[in-house]
Amino acid sequence: MYKVLVADDEFYVIKSLIASIDWNAYGFDVIGHASNGLEALDRISELKPDLVFTDIKMPGMGGLELIKMSNEKMSNIIFIVISGYAEFAYAQKAMNYGALGYCLKPFEDNEIINMLLKAKSILDKNRIYMETHLLELL
Image (cartoon, rainbow, N blue to C red; front, side, top):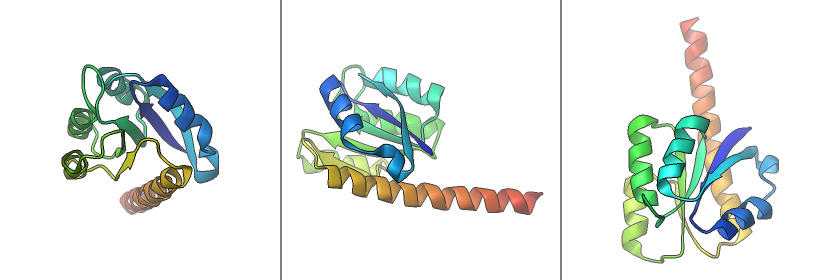
């Protein structure tokens, strides 16, 4: 199972995102959530998630800064931005920082599932690469 962290300053968004998807069916387990960017950064350091869903605007630190700072520390995390802002500039900046996707609130379950499938494909490839590399070293 791959580990997921959800960061959003609206608790009902966190609850609905977690409740609306059968995460285990897609190979994921939601291991925690954060209500602002600073808390999310701490949770990322503590829990080491494989995938982070983050809001674009949160108190303390927004999602874009969270992605940037996390990538400086741990470059193997996949980020998906969830936002109520349909502004191209936000989406473009998120992609430039390496986000896998940008989902507008309110989002459809299929949109989140498609993002999970993309993330799982990348994570599976990375895991196979690491296992192959480890075997070669041994």
